[in-house]
Length: 428
Image (cartoon, one colour):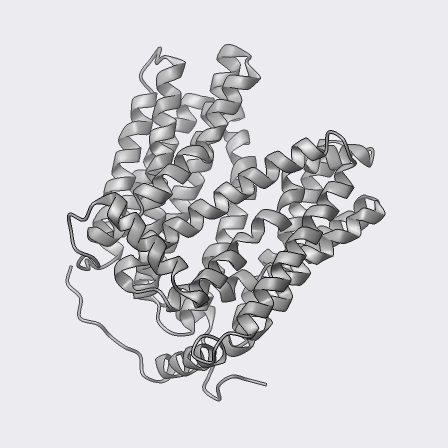
């Protein structure tokens, strides 16, 4: 049953918005550039030192500085014009990457530069995410979220492979030069492809006060608190990615099998997310969100039976497919956020997810030292399913103003946006 008799929004409607096209293209360039720089520098560090520890320290640039930036710099995208924040972040990263090309640069300096580049990613992400909500209205926003999430999965998987091939073919230094160009191109797309908008919050606010205000906004609201924790469940159902190698080794497989396993986990959600978002209305998505979150984690319990590679791929693909509930969680989260705290809230959500995933990977890796990896994945999935059950019941039993009423509001807003597009006054 449809949530609205009006014509459903389509992905064509989303890409018909010029600003979204520019934001999407800049996102692809920046994300691909990040992968390229990370892989290139990690390989460069290892080639010069033959030290797995130093290579791991370089690769950690994808995680540790991001959390710092997400917590303390994301609020900049609320206090300053968001287009300007994105352009400055891109151009600064282009300069930092170019600095890496200086001959005989010490390894310590290279790692510090990479950490600085990664620290600037969260304010860019927060500004972009907040701007997407300004650019894309109503039900089209859910389609925009699905597009960006699917793109992210493709870029992360394909980008890492492509980065390895590029570095192997042309070397690390040319790869870093190409990375600098991606940031410049991204800045140009944003500058000439999007409109200028004023800052959402008061300029000059203390970053710590801004962080505290963002925490109060997110965790002081029952619905936002529930939605952000539903998003953080990814820490449980992505455990297979953290111990994929020991898991396939327990099955007698090697690197190819590990790659197939990781690809299977992304396949279902990448293919079906656009279909789910387009065919299922906002009310139904919110109603299915809790049960799908439970299934995402609960499906992994089947690994306790120690299946072979083919069945394991099917289990991980099914688990990942249920993860499309994240579109509903993301959309519901954004709809309840005040604009002046939107970027900071995105930063909190990203930081919490990254910390949760890091902790889950470390704990899963440690547990896999003493028990079979299949058991670790099953236990993680079971624990995640229990947490998801609690969150699903909490969402279901919230007051009408938070649950069903909010869903009806989203449905009405989507219908109105399809019938009467809103054109805000903008200036270059």
